[in-house]
Length: 121
Image (cartoon, rainbow, N blue to C red; front, side, top):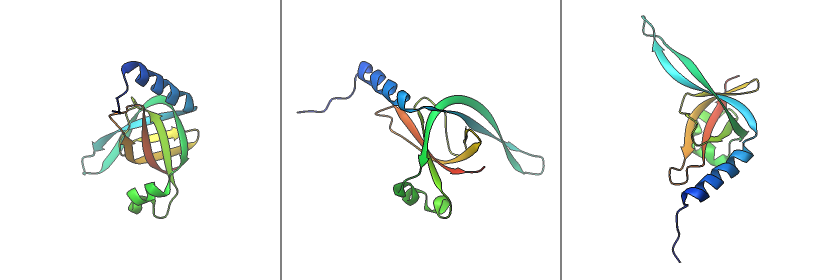
């Protein structure tokens, strides 16, 4: 028996199933780096509203990002696949703000993205 990839109908159904699990409203801030006259760096964020699901990062995530997750609680934020999110993005959920330290996704099965984060406030 050979495995077959999802066709467009199956993929659309799978994306809808994932979307039904993303029940929390959030805002993803995409950073733009600004360099001042003295060479200092600052970021401004363009915001996009979407839905997500937040949970504590796993032990496997701690192995992937040992230097960033050594002494803090890591967070996993699952987002729709089409969401623009990258390292340094900021995700706001209620009063919590998370900074993205890594992004996982599978281009073969484009259903979701998982941002590994640390809470910044």
